[in-house]
Image (tube, rainbow, N blue to C red; front, side, top):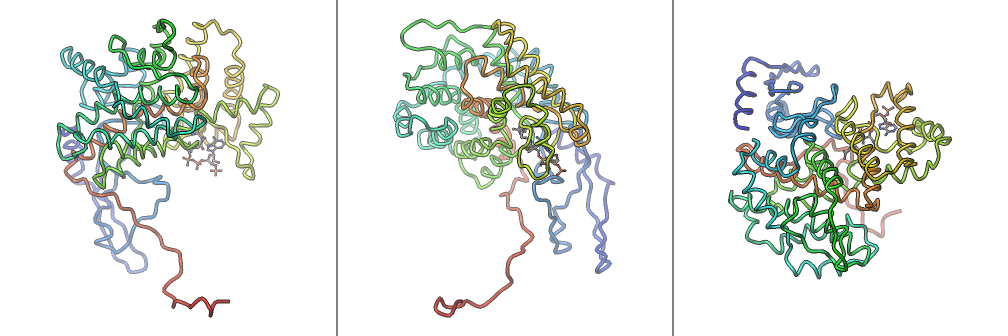
Length: 443
Ligand code: CMC
Protein backbone atom coordinates (compact mmCIF):
# COMPACT_ATOMS: atom_id res chain seq x y z
CA UNK A 1 0.00 0.00 0.00
CA UNK A 2 2.85 2.38 0.83
CA UNK A 3 4.21 1.47 -2.60
CA UNK A 4 0.94 2.54 -4.25
CA UNK A 5 0.97 5.89 -2.47
CA UNK A 6 4.60 6.46 -3.44
CA UNK A 7 3.80 5.72 -7.08
CA UNK A 8 0.87 8.14 -6.96
CA UNK A 9 3.14 10.96 -5.83
CA UNK A 10 6.07 10.28 -8.17
CA UNK A 11 4.01 10.40 -11.35
CA UNK A 12 2.27 13.64 -10.43
CA UNK A 13 5.20 16.03 -10.03
CA UNK A 14 4.73 18.14 -13.15
CA UNK A 15 0.97 17.92 -13.32
CA UNK A 16 -1.10 20.93 -12.39
CA UNK A 17 -4.39 22.62 -13.24
CA UNK A 18 -5.02 26.35 -12.98
CA UNK A 19 -8.31 27.82 -11.85
CA UNK A 20 -9.11 31.42 -12.79
CA UNK A 21 -11.58 33.49 -10.77
CA UNK A 22 -13.25 35.53 -13.53
CA UNK A 23 -14.50 38.10 -11.00
CA UNK A 24 -11.01 39.06 -9.77
CA UNK A 25 -8.71 37.56 -12.39
CA UNK A 26 -6.87 35.74 -9.58
CA UNK A 27 -5.32 32.42 -10.60
CA UNK A 28 -4.59 29.47 -8.45
CA UNK A 29 -2.58 26.44 -9.53
CA UNK A 30 -3.30 23.09 -7.99
CA UNK A 31 -1.43 19.78 -8.31
CA UNK A 32 -2.98 16.86 -10.18
CA UNK A 33 -2.33 13.42 -8.73
CA UNK A 34 -2.23 10.19 -10.69
CA UNK A 35 -3.19 6.99 -8.93
CA UNK A 36 -2.06 3.62 -10.21
CA UNK A 37 -5.48 3.28 -11.88
CA UNK A 38 -8.52 5.46 -12.43
CA UNK A 39 -9.19 9.12 -13.25
CA UNK A 40 -6.68 11.83 -12.39
CA UNK A 41 -7.36 13.76 -9.21
CA UNK A 42 -7.05 17.51 -8.57
CA UNK A 43 -5.57 18.11 -5.14
CA UNK A 44 -7.68 20.99 -3.79
CA UNK A 45 -6.49 20.83 -0.19
CA UNK A 46 -5.04 24.35 -0.33
CA UNK A 47 -7.94 25.84 -2.30
CA UNK A 48 -9.69 27.50 0.66
CA UNK A 49 -6.44 28.78 2.12
CA UNK A 50 -5.43 30.32 -1.22
CA UNK A 51 -8.78 31.56 -2.55
CA UNK A 52 -11.20 31.70 0.40
CA UNK A 53 -13.56 29.49 -1.66
CA UNK A 54 -14.91 25.99 -1.06
CA UNK A 55 -15.97 23.43 -3.64
CA UNK A 56 -19.63 22.39 -3.81
CA UNK A 57 -20.32 18.73 -4.55
CA UNK A 58 -23.51 17.36 -2.93
CA UNK A 59 -23.50 13.55 -3.05
CA UNK A 60 -19.71 13.67 -3.64
CA UNK A 61 -20.10 12.91 -7.35
CA UNK A 62 -16.71 14.47 -8.17
CA UNK A 63 -14.91 14.13 -4.86
CA UNK A 64 -12.20 11.68 -3.81
CA UNK A 65 -12.26 11.62 -0.01
CA UNK A 66 -9.11 9.60 0.67
CA UNK A 67 -6.20 7.63 -0.74
CA UNK A 68 -6.80 3.91 -0.71
CA UNK A 69 -5.02 0.82 -2.02
CA UNK A 70 -7.78 -1.66 -1.24
CA UNK A 71 -10.37 -1.65 -4.00
CA UNK A 72 -10.49 -0.31 -7.52
CA UNK A 73 -13.61 -0.03 -9.68
CA UNK A 74 -13.60 0.84 -13.37
CA UNK A 75 -17.24 1.81 -13.69
CA UNK A 76 -17.17 2.33 -17.46
CA UNK A 77 -15.71 -1.08 -18.20
CA UNK A 78 -17.48 -2.80 -15.29
CA UNK A 79 -14.51 -4.24 -13.42
CA UNK A 80 -13.72 -4.54 -9.73
CA UNK A 81 -10.40 -5.48 -8.09
CA UNK A 82 -9.28 -5.96 -4.51
CA UNK A 83 -5.56 -5.22 -4.05
CA UNK A 84 -5.12 -5.90 -7.79
CA UNK A 85 -7.03 -9.19 -7.94
CA UNK A 86 -10.20 -9.22 -10.04
CA UNK A 87 -13.47 -10.07 -8.34
CA UNK A 88 -14.24 -12.79 -10.91
CA UNK A 89 -11.01 -14.58 -10.11
CA UNK A 90 -11.44 -14.18 -6.36
CA UNK A 91 -15.04 -15.48 -6.55
CA UNK A 92 -13.89 -18.48 -8.54
CA UNK A 93 -10.58 -19.41 -6.91
CA UNK A 94 -10.45 -17.90 -3.44
CA UNK A 95 -12.66 -18.09 -0.36
CA UNK A 96 -14.09 -15.41 1.89
CA UNK A 97 -11.55 -15.69 4.70
CA UNK A 98 -8.68 -15.45 2.23
CA UNK A 99 -10.30 -12.29 0.78
CA UNK A 100 -10.60 -10.97 4.36
CA UNK A 101 -6.89 -11.56 4.89
CA UNK A 102 -6.12 -9.85 1.58
CA UNK A 103 -8.16 -6.77 2.48
CA UNK A 104 -6.69 -6.53 5.98
CA UNK A 105 -3.08 -7.08 4.91
CA UNK A 106 -2.87 -5.99 1.28
CA UNK A 107 -1.40 -9.36 0.18
CA UNK A 108 -2.66 -12.91 -0.18
CA UNK A 109 -1.49 -15.07 2.75
CA UNK A 110 1.00 -17.90 2.54
CA UNK A 111 -0.07 -21.27 3.96
CA UNK A 112 1.09 -20.60 7.53
CA UNK A 113 -0.46 -17.12 7.57
CA UNK A 114 -3.75 -18.51 6.27
CA UNK A 115 -3.84 -21.25 8.91
CA UNK A 116 -3.14 -18.77 11.69
CA UNK A 117 -5.84 -16.40 10.41
CA UNK A 118 -8.46 -19.13 9.99
CA UNK A 119 -7.68 -20.47 13.45
CA UNK A 120 -8.01 -17.00 15.01
CA UNK A 121 -11.28 -16.16 13.26
CA UNK A 122 -12.82 -19.55 14.04
CA UNK A 123 -11.91 -19.24 17.71
CA UNK A 124 -13.31 -15.76 18.17
CA UNK A 125 -16.80 -16.53 16.88
CA UNK A 126 -18.54 -16.80 20.25
CA UNK A 127 -19.95 -13.60 21.69
CA UNK A 128 -19.95 -12.58 25.34
CA UNK A 129 -22.76 -14.49 27.05
CA UNK A 130 -24.16 -11.25 28.46
CA UNK A 131 -24.87 -10.14 24.89
CA UNK A 132 -27.33 -13.03 24.74
CA UNK A 133 -29.61 -11.17 27.15
CA UNK A 134 -29.21 -8.03 25.11
CA UNK A 135 -31.34 -9.57 22.33
CA UNK A 136 -34.24 -10.04 24.71
CA UNK A 137 -34.61 -6.28 25.02
CA UNK A 138 -35.85 -6.17 21.42
CA UNK A 139 -39.37 -6.90 20.26
CA UNK A 140 -39.60 -10.21 18.40
CA UNK A 141 -40.85 -8.40 15.30
CA UNK A 142 -37.89 -5.99 15.25
CA UNK A 143 -36.16 -5.77 11.87
CA UNK A 144 -32.91 -7.78 12.22
CA UNK A 145 -30.97 -4.76 10.87
CA UNK A 146 -32.23 -2.78 13.90
CA UNK A 147 -30.90 -5.55 16.13
CA UNK A 148 -27.58 -5.54 14.23
CA UNK A 149 -27.11 -1.79 14.76
CA UNK A 150 -27.81 -2.21 18.50
CA UNK A 151 -25.80 -5.36 19.19
CA UNK A 152 -22.75 -4.39 17.12
CA UNK A 153 -22.73 -0.94 18.74
CA UNK A 154 -22.90 -2.70 22.12
CA UNK A 155 -19.71 -4.68 21.41
CA UNK A 156 -17.74 -1.63 22.54
CA UNK A 157 -19.29 -2.12 25.98
CA UNK A 158 -17.98 -5.71 26.08
CA UNK A 159 -14.52 -5.65 24.50
CA UNK A 160 -12.79 -2.71 26.19
CA UNK A 161 -9.41 -4.26 25.56
CA UNK A 162 -9.64 -3.62 21.81
CA UNK A 163 -10.92 -0.05 21.65
CA UNK A 164 -7.63 1.85 21.81
CA UNK A 165 -7.33 2.84 18.16
CA UNK A 166 -3.71 4.01 18.56
CA UNK A 167 -2.57 0.50 19.51
CA UNK A 168 -1.81 -1.59 16.40
CA UNK A 169 -2.37 -4.86 18.26
CA UNK A 170 -5.76 -3.73 19.56
CA UNK A 171 -6.75 -2.64 16.05
CA UNK A 172 -5.90 -6.11 14.78
CA UNK A 173 -7.83 -7.80 17.60
CA UNK A 174 -10.90 -5.58 17.02
CA UNK A 175 -10.79 -6.33 13.26
CA UNK A 176 -10.63 -10.06 13.84
CA UNK A 177 -13.30 -9.97 16.53
CA UNK A 178 -15.70 -8.13 14.24
CA UNK A 179 -15.18 -10.52 11.30
CA UNK A 180 -15.41 -13.56 13.58
CA UNK A 181 -18.46 -12.52 15.59
CA UNK A 182 -20.60 -11.02 12.86
CA UNK A 183 -22.07 -14.37 11.65
CA UNK A 184 -23.05 -15.24 15.23
CA UNK A 185 -24.62 -11.82 15.83
CA UNK A 186 -26.50 -12.00 12.50
CA UNK A 187 -27.70 -15.59 12.99
CA UNK A 188 -28.90 -14.80 16.51
CA UNK A 189 -30.85 -11.79 15.26
CA UNK A 190 -32.65 -14.22 12.94
CA UNK A 191 -33.19 -16.93 15.57
CA UNK A 192 -34.56 -14.33 17.97
CA UNK A 193 -37.03 -13.05 15.37
CA UNK A 194 -38.46 -16.53 14.81
CA UNK A 195 -38.45 -17.49 18.48
CA UNK A 196 -35.98 -20.37 18.16
CA UNK A 197 -33.05 -21.03 20.51
CA UNK A 198 -29.80 -19.39 19.46
CA UNK A 199 -27.29 -21.86 18.09
CA UNK A 200 -23.65 -21.55 19.17
CA UNK A 201 -20.83 -21.52 16.60
CA UNK A 202 -18.89 -24.71 15.85
CA UNK A 203 -15.12 -24.70 15.43
CA UNK A 204 -15.08 -27.66 13.03
CA UNK A 205 -16.98 -25.72 10.35
CA UNK A 206 -15.66 -23.12 7.97
CA UNK A 207 -16.94 -19.53 7.98
CA UNK A 208 -19.87 -19.95 5.56
CA UNK A 209 -20.79 -23.41 6.87
CA UNK A 210 -20.83 -22.11 10.40
CA UNK A 211 -23.17 -19.27 9.47
CA UNK A 212 -25.60 -21.65 7.73
CA UNK A 213 -25.40 -23.97 10.72
CA UNK A 214 -26.26 -21.19 13.18
CA UNK A 215 -29.16 -20.11 10.91
CA UNK A 216 -30.65 -23.49 10.09
CA UNK A 217 -29.82 -25.91 12.90
CA UNK A 218 -31.99 -26.47 15.96
CA UNK A 219 -30.97 -28.23 19.18
CA UNK A 220 -33.46 -31.06 18.42
CA UNK A 221 -31.62 -32.82 15.63
CA UNK A 222 -28.34 -33.15 13.81
CA UNK A 223 -27.86 -30.69 11.03
CA UNK A 224 -25.59 -31.39 8.07
CA UNK A 225 -24.40 -28.32 6.22
CA UNK A 226 -24.75 -28.71 2.46
CA UNK A 227 -21.33 -28.00 0.87
CA UNK A 228 -22.83 -26.61 -2.37
CA UNK A 229 -24.97 -24.13 -0.50
CA UNK A 230 -22.05 -23.27 1.79
CA UNK A 231 -19.90 -22.53 -1.30
CA UNK A 232 -22.68 -20.31 -2.72
CA UNK A 233 -22.93 -18.51 0.64
CA UNK A 234 -19.17 -18.01 0.66
CA UNK A 235 -19.27 -16.57 -2.86
CA UNK A 236 -22.03 -14.15 -1.83
CA UNK A 237 -19.79 -13.04 1.06
CA UNK A 238 -16.84 -12.51 -1.35
CA UNK A 239 -18.97 -10.43 -3.73
CA UNK A 240 -19.98 -8.10 -0.91
CA UNK A 241 -16.63 -7.86 0.89
CA UNK A 242 -15.62 -4.34 -0.12
CA UNK A 243 -16.62 -1.70 -2.62
CA UNK A 244 -14.42 1.37 -2.41
CA UNK A 245 -15.81 4.59 -0.87
CA UNK A 246 -19.56 3.78 -0.97
CA UNK A 247 -21.99 5.44 1.47
CA UNK A 248 -21.59 3.01 4.38
CA UNK A 249 -17.79 2.80 4.03
CA UNK A 250 -17.58 6.58 3.94
CA UNK A 251 -19.81 6.62 7.04
CA UNK A 252 -17.41 4.26 8.82
CA UNK A 253 -14.43 6.41 7.78
CA UNK A 254 -16.14 9.62 8.86
CA UNK A 255 -17.16 8.13 12.23
CA UNK A 256 -13.63 6.74 12.66
CA UNK A 257 -12.05 10.07 11.76
CA UNK A 258 -13.22 11.44 15.13
CA UNK A 259 -11.26 8.57 16.75
CA UNK A 260 -14.42 6.74 17.79
CA UNK A 261 -13.86 3.06 18.61
CA UNK A 262 -14.10 0.49 15.78
CA UNK A 263 -17.26 -1.22 17.06
CA UNK A 264 -19.14 2.10 17.16
CA UNK A 265 -17.88 2.91 13.64
CA UNK A 266 -19.09 -0.41 12.21
CA UNK A 267 -22.49 0.09 13.87
CA UNK A 268 -22.66 3.44 12.03
CA UNK A 269 -21.84 1.64 8.77
CA UNK A 270 -24.62 -0.89 9.36
CA UNK A 271 -27.13 1.92 9.94
CA UNK A 272 -26.14 3.55 6.64
CA UNK A 273 -26.19 0.28 4.71
CA UNK A 274 -29.80 -0.36 5.75
CA UNK A 275 -31.27 2.25 3.35
CA UNK A 276 -32.94 0.99 0.13
CA UNK A 277 -30.68 3.15 -2.06
CA UNK A 278 -27.72 1.14 -0.67
CA UNK A 279 -27.66 -2.34 0.91
CA UNK A 280 -31.40 -2.37 1.58
CA UNK A 281 -31.91 -2.69 -2.19
CA UNK A 282 -31.68 -6.51 -2.10
CA UNK A 283 -34.73 -6.63 0.18
CA UNK A 284 -36.43 -3.96 -1.95
CA UNK A 285 -35.85 -6.00 -5.15
CA UNK A 286 -37.87 -8.92 -3.80
CA UNK A 287 -40.61 -6.59 -2.53
CA UNK A 288 -40.70 -5.06 -6.02
CA UNK A 289 -40.86 -8.47 -7.75
CA UNK A 290 -43.64 -9.43 -5.36
CA UNK A 291 -45.53 -6.27 -6.22
CA UNK A 292 -45.05 -6.76 -9.98
CA UNK A 293 -46.34 -10.30 -9.56
CA UNK A 294 -46.48 -11.46 -13.18
CA UNK A 295 -44.66 -10.94 -16.48
CA UNK A 296 -47.58 -9.12 -18.09
CA UNK A 297 -47.16 -6.33 -15.52
CA UNK A 298 -43.41 -5.79 -16.16
CA UNK A 299 -44.08 -3.21 -18.91
CA UNK A 300 -46.19 -1.00 -16.66
CA UNK A 301 -43.48 -0.99 -13.95
CA UNK A 302 -40.80 -0.11 -16.52
CA UNK A 303 -43.05 2.76 -17.55
CA UNK A 304 -43.40 3.88 -13.94
CA UNK A 305 -39.61 3.75 -13.43
CA UNK A 306 -39.17 6.13 -16.37
CA UNK A 307 -41.83 8.55 -15.22
CA UNK A 308 -40.23 11.64 -13.61
CA UNK A 309 -43.40 12.27 -11.56
CA UNK A 310 -43.43 8.77 -10.09
CA UNK A 311 -40.95 8.11 -7.24
CA UNK A 312 -40.79 4.41 -8.22
CA UNK A 313 -37.34 3.18 -9.30
CA UNK A 314 -36.33 -0.19 -10.59
CA UNK A 315 -34.65 -1.63 -7.50
CA UNK A 316 -31.38 -3.47 -8.15
CA UNK A 317 -30.76 -1.27 -11.18
CA UNK A 318 -28.31 1.59 -11.56
CA UNK A 319 -25.14 2.49 -9.74
CA UNK A 320 -23.22 5.66 -8.98
CA UNK A 321 -19.97 4.21 -10.32
CA UNK A 322 -20.90 1.39 -12.73
CA UNK A 323 -22.05 2.65 -16.10
CA UNK A 324 -21.84 -0.93 -17.37
CA UNK A 325 -22.94 -4.32 -16.03
CA UNK A 326 -21.89 -4.63 -12.36
CA UNK A 327 -19.30 -7.48 -12.43
CA UNK A 328 -20.69 -8.75 -9.13
CA UNK A 329 -24.16 -9.06 -10.66
CA UNK A 330 -22.72 -11.33 -13.38
CA UNK A 331 -21.26 -13.76 -10.83
CA UNK A 332 -24.43 -13.45 -8.76
CA UNK A 333 -26.60 -14.41 -11.74
CA UNK A 334 -24.45 -17.51 -12.40
CA UNK A 335 -24.57 -18.45 -8.72
CA UNK A 336 -28.33 -17.98 -8.79
CA UNK A 337 -28.69 -20.52 -11.61
CA UNK A 338 -26.31 -22.95 -9.87
CA UNK A 339 -28.21 -22.78 -6.58
CA UNK A 340 -31.62 -23.17 -8.19
CA UNK A 341 -30.39 -26.11 -10.31
CA UNK A 342 -28.89 -27.73 -7.24
CA UNK A 343 -32.09 -27.28 -5.25
CA UNK A 344 -34.08 -28.67 -8.18
CA UNK A 345 -36.10 -25.47 -8.48
CA UNK A 346 -37.19 -25.52 -12.12
CA UNK A 347 -39.70 -22.69 -12.19
CA UNK A 348 -38.70 -19.93 -9.86
CA UNK A 349 -41.25 -17.20 -10.58
CA UNK A 350 -39.01 -14.46 -9.15
CA UNK A 351 -36.08 -15.49 -11.38
CA UNK A 352 -38.31 -15.60 -14.47
CA UNK A 353 -39.64 -12.15 -13.62
CA UNK A 354 -36.19 -10.78 -12.87
CA UNK A 355 -34.73 -12.06 -16.14
CA UNK A 356 -37.66 -10.62 -18.06
CA UNK A 357 -37.25 -7.30 -16.29
CA UNK A 358 -33.51 -7.30 -17.02
CA UNK A 359 -34.07 -8.12 -20.70
CA UNK A 360 -36.72 -5.43 -21.20
CA UNK A 361 -34.85 -2.79 -19.20
CA UNK A 362 -31.51 -3.38 -20.91
CA UNK A 363 -33.17 -2.96 -24.33
CA UNK A 364 -35.15 0.13 -23.31
CA UNK A 365 -33.83 3.48 -24.55
CA UNK A 366 -34.21 5.17 -21.13
CA UNK A 367 -32.07 2.58 -19.31
CA UNK A 368 -29.56 2.27 -22.18
CA UNK A 369 -29.09 6.02 -22.42
CA UNK A 370 -28.67 6.45 -18.66
CA UNK A 371 -26.45 3.35 -18.51
CA UNK A 372 -28.58 1.66 -15.88
CA UNK A 373 -27.66 -2.02 -15.52
CA UNK A 374 -28.44 -4.64 -12.88
CA UNK A 375 -26.31 -4.22 -9.77
CA UNK A 376 -25.16 -6.69 -7.10
CA UNK A 377 -28.53 -6.60 -5.35
CA UNK A 378 -30.59 -7.64 -8.34
CA UNK A 379 -30.03 -11.42 -8.15
CA UNK A 380 -28.73 -11.89 -4.60
CA UNK A 381 -32.21 -11.86 -3.04
CA UNK A 382 -33.44 -14.63 -5.33
CA UNK A 383 -30.54 -16.88 -4.26
CA UNK A 384 -30.99 -16.07 -0.59
CA UNK A 385 -34.72 -16.69 -0.80
CA UNK A 386 -34.12 -20.08 -2.47
CA UNK A 387 -31.71 -20.89 0.37
CA UNK A 388 -34.49 -20.23 2.87
CA UNK A 389 -33.62 -16.75 4.15
CA UNK A 390 -36.49 -14.33 4.82
CA UNK A 391 -36.18 -10.99 2.98
CA UNK A 392 -35.44 -9.14 6.22
CA UNK A 393 -32.15 -11.07 6.48
CA UNK A 394 -30.82 -10.04 3.07
CA UNK A 395 -29.29 -6.74 4.16
CA UNK A 396 -28.01 -8.40 7.34
CA UNK A 397 -26.01 -10.82 5.16
CA UNK A 398 -24.67 -7.86 3.17
CA UNK A 399 -23.60 -6.20 6.46
CA UNK A 400 -21.94 -9.39 7.69
CA UNK A 401 -19.85 -9.66 4.51
CA UNK A 402 -19.12 -5.92 4.21
CA UNK A 403 -17.74 -5.80 7.77
CA UNK A 404 -14.29 -6.78 6.49
CA UNK A 405 -14.33 -3.95 3.92
CA UNK A 406 -15.45 -1.45 6.54
CA UNK A 407 -12.82 -2.49 9.07
CA UNK A 408 -10.03 -2.71 6.46
CA UNK A 409 -10.88 0.80 5.25
CA UNK A 410 -11.09 2.05 8.84
CA UNK A 411 -7.67 0.53 9.60
CA UNK A 412 -6.17 2.01 6.42
CA UNK A 413 -7.49 5.43 7.45
CA UNK A 414 -6.15 5.24 11.03
CA UNK A 415 -2.74 4.17 9.67
CA UNK A 416 -2.67 6.98 7.07
CA UNK A 417 -0.24 9.68 8.32
CA UNK A 418 -2.27 12.48 6.69
CA UNK A 419 -5.55 11.39 8.30
CA UNK A 420 -7.65 14.24 9.74
CA UNK A 421 -11.13 14.45 11.20
CA UNK A 422 -13.64 14.54 8.34
CA UNK A 423 -15.35 17.90 8.35
CA UNK A 424 -17.03 19.07 5.11
CA UNK A 425 -18.21 22.66 4.69
CA UNK A 426 -21.41 23.95 3.11
CA UNK A 427 -23.03 26.50 0.82
CA UNK A 428 -25.11 28.37 3.40
CA UNK A 429 -28.47 29.53 2.04
CA UNK A 430 -30.26 30.47 5.27
CA UNK A 431 -30.97 33.94 6.70
CA UNK A 432 -28.17 36.41 7.22
CA UNK A 433 -28.03 37.91 10.71
CA UNK A 434 -31.35 39.30 12.04
CA UNK A 435 -32.40 40.59 15.47
CA UNK A 436 -34.26 38.35 17.92
CA UNK A 437 -37.97 39.24 18.22
CA UNK A 438 -39.57 38.56 21.66
CA UNK A 439 -42.53 36.11 21.56
CA UNK A 440 -45.18 38.73 22.41
CA UNK A 441 -44.04 40.89 19.46
CA UNK A 442 -44.23 38.13 16.80
CA UNK A 443 -47.17 38.07 14.35
N1 CMC B 1 -34.76 3.22 -11.96
C1 CMC B 1 -35.11 4.26 -12.75
N2 CMC B 1 -34.35 5.34 -12.99
C2 CMC B 1 -33.15 5.39 -12.39
C3 CMC B 1 -32.70 4.35 -11.56
C4 CMC B 1 -33.54 3.23 -11.36
N3 CMC B 1 -33.15 2.22 -10.58
N4 CMC B 1 -31.47 4.66 -11.10
C5 CMC B 1 -31.16 5.86 -11.62
N5 CMC B 1 -32.17 6.30 -12.40
C6 CMC B 1 -32.18 7.55 -13.17
C7 CMC B 1 -32.45 8.74 -12.28
O1 CMC B 1 -33.83 9.05 -12.22
C8 CMC B 1 -31.65 9.83 -12.97
O2 CMC B 1 -32.40 10.32 -14.05
P1 CMC B 1 -32.25 11.87 -14.50
O3 CMC B 1 -30.83 12.06 -14.91
O4 CMC B 1 -33.22 12.00 -15.64
O5 CMC B 1 -32.62 12.68 -13.30
C9 CMC B 1 -30.43 9.08 -13.54
O6 CMC B 1 -30.87 7.73 -13.70
C10 CMC B 1 -29.22 9.10 -12.62
O7 CMC B 1 -29.64 8.65 -11.34
P2 CMC B 1 -29.13 9.27 -9.97
O8 CMC B 1 -30.12 8.98 -8.90
O9 CMC B 1 -28.75 10.70 -10.18
O10 CMC B 1 -27.82 8.42 -9.78
P3 CMC B 1 -27.07 8.16 -8.43
O11 CMC B 1 -25.70 7.80 -8.77
O12 CMC B 1 -27.26 9.30 -7.48
O13 CMC B 1 -27.86 6.91 -7.79
C11 CMC B 1 -28.49 4.71 -7.20
C12 CMC B 1 -27.41 5.61 -7.83
C13 CMC B 1 -27.90 3.31 -7.00
C14 CMC B 1 -28.88 5.26 -5.81
C15 CMC B 1 -29.72 4.69 -8.15
O14 CMC B 1 -29.35 4.11 -9.39
C16 CMC B 1 -30.89 3.91 -7.54
O15 CMC B 1 -31.68 4.49 -6.78
N6 CMC B 1 -31.02 2.57 -7.84
C17 CMC B 1 -32.04 1.75 -7.24
C18 CMC B 1 -31.59 1.31 -5.85
C19 CMC B 1 -30.50 0.27 -5.88
O16 CMC B 1 -30.57 -0.71 -6.63
N7 CMC B 1 -29.46 0.46 -5.03
C20 CMC B 1 -28.35 -0.49 -4.90
C21 CMC B 1 -27.05 0.09 -5.41
S1 CMC B 1 -25.76 -1.12 -5.58
C22 CMC B 1 -25.44 -1.77 -4.06
C23 CMC B 1 -25.15 -0.79 -2.95
O17 CMC B 1 -24.71 0.34 -3.15
O18 CMC B 1 -25.37 -1.16 -1.83
